[in-house]
Length: 614
Image 1: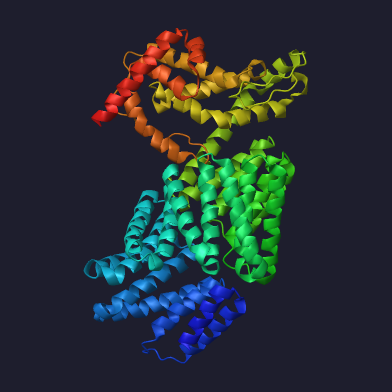
Image 2: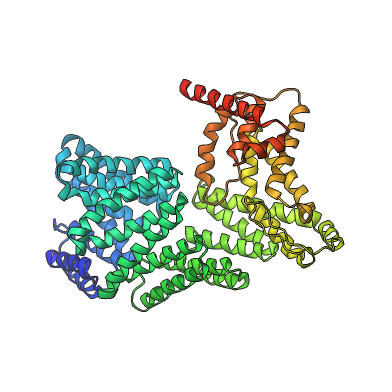
């Protein structure tokens, strides 16, 4: 019966027909019921049953079966490790996956770690027999570590898995290239998580290249995997700003999954919905908002069809699609509709995924941002606070999501203080301005200016809020490049933004204005103190923007080098790194272009020498 059940499960993997899997579960349960407590087949039956139950979304039952299999095999391995440790590692591997599925991440990590430890011992004495299994467990361990925010350790595990599978594929590509592509896929994700985007793109590109070759010779077996890798590749391309290529990869993934779903909807519609969702995101990023809305709505239609059959295992993707649907309306400027949809998505996420799921955090944060965009900071700030508390509790204080939420909360609180303090003064200034004009900032300014008489309190707040979000992080970094400590840079940046808010209606090019004003404030600050602490870069806890935490962490590494430059060279280099031309910098700093170029050349030579020393 075990073999028959396994055959039906394999058939499900090909056909995607849920009835095959349900029949397999019944057969496996019958075999288990007829086995005795000391039947040597019992742990294998429990293992297989757990996997099948997980496939149909019966997660708690799957976890119970996997736990029983581990308990039996732990007893057997305690008395005869040579005979049973390999099987115990397999069961621990499965148990880790089941625990992760129900949100018990720390326990999942413990099970995965135990599986890796066993297989490392086995592979050390017999690599030919156990290295492939070790790579599988390292793959899983990397995922579990990433789930709890231990990104560097996750990357290390994923890298080890790739290294093993590269060796195996070099000698036997037919047997191991498919596994290598899977590990490269995971490695790309881990590299992206720590901000190493170019390397992430390289790993994702390699995975796609392998799967394209495999799919060319055996499309039935590998096209589904190719679509998955194209999905990931699209994300990596978007991360490095290659939007058109990202859109092309996402479109290819959708095209493959549409073909697959047309012939076997039970097996592939969920994957199609995921790819449609990603394609919608790529279209949003490309500014094609109406097309994005149409694609995201198509994804939602697929998920709702799945709801009538079996959405098990795809709830989180459905929630993400609901959130993206709201985001599309935000992009179209329909904040009221977006708020309503975010509320619905949040209710569903809490009901299905739970209060502590990352998607729930994300949607609550998006809802807070939508409220803030609508000028309702009284609703936005408590939502940010609740989201931050939950993220700190579940993911930890240093997790990128936690840092992003903290940044949003801080920014919202500052903007409300600025509005409360300076809003009436701006209203009065705005009322006095009678001229009708439309001014658009220079190429660096993304804020559009409309006729002053049409700019009411909410419009001004929205313009400034958008500019603040886009600019505060860069302004702090700009000052730190010039030698300011984080604390000084943050203080000057906030003071500068307050001054900007008071004079918003009169300033044509805010990006340049804040840099000029902040630079002068830094010079005054330096002149007012007796000694500037020098040496290594200070410990920092900046306010990173959404999804930009890795760049900030990487950026700290250059501060130590920049701090060793003379002040004028450091200042000129800061303006240059911020994208200004020599002529523009010359005008802002009041130095000749020739002097500026000379200082810039010296700064670059000085940095090159310092890098060689290191």
